[in-house]
Length: 103
Image (tube, rainbow, N blue to C red; front, side, top):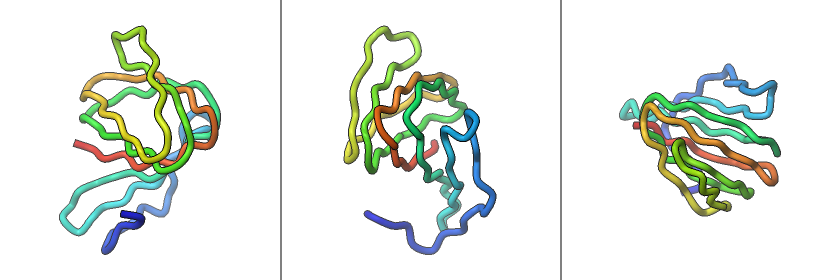
């Protein structure tokens, strides 16, 4: 799906890591919350509360999950799961467009 229908959008951006990651929170009609954003080329560490699915729309990155020494490369059209109350390191190799699905 290339777009979400019938959503509300938080007009204030979520800006992380000195602007290297910028997203907007969208809420679907059923109350489901997602964020849609871009991560600029960088190396970052994200902490999670709820479980997440990171759907990659465009770009390339390498990801290392908490407790692992292994880096896995992903590209647009792929996704990866992140456990709740965890973290992951991400190295974006080019602008990375994503949708984060919570819960």
